[in-house]
Image (cartoon, rainbow, N blue to C red; front, top):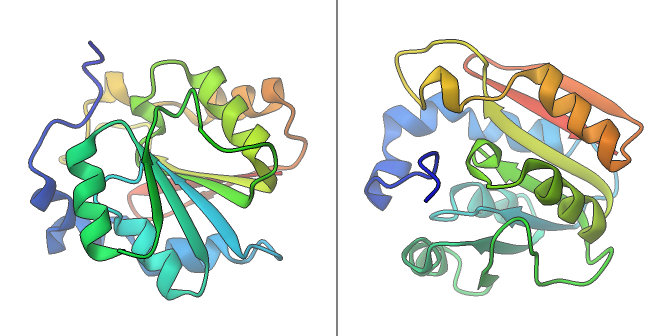
Length: 179
């Protein structure tokens, strides 16, 4: 059993205090600086918080999650989107199915980091985006031992085959862009 997986109440994912920390609008704007993103796979979509924001920005969204209860919540917010139960390490879509793949606050929870990032690389045409906690002790979010350093994430990106790697530090989070 993976002890890094969020096991809290789904409603907590959308509490204002938490969503303010996530800087959702800023994250979406930064992600959409990458030109040509019209379709996006939200990996580990949870309740669809980021999927909803990307959808409102005009993108065609699909999402996967390993928790059917999360997908039920996501479908309530986005009934026209395609949500499927699947792990990040085994994405049920074909090669180059999306312009971009997005991990929103979930990459630290996957069982096999390299396999998950390889799958994102496979299904995205140009871009993978990872939003994660900063690698430091904070009064919120997962404990430090569940967080991933930027060096590790960038190393994985190179291992998988990405050549353009950037990192943007936000107030509480880090957005990684790979192409």
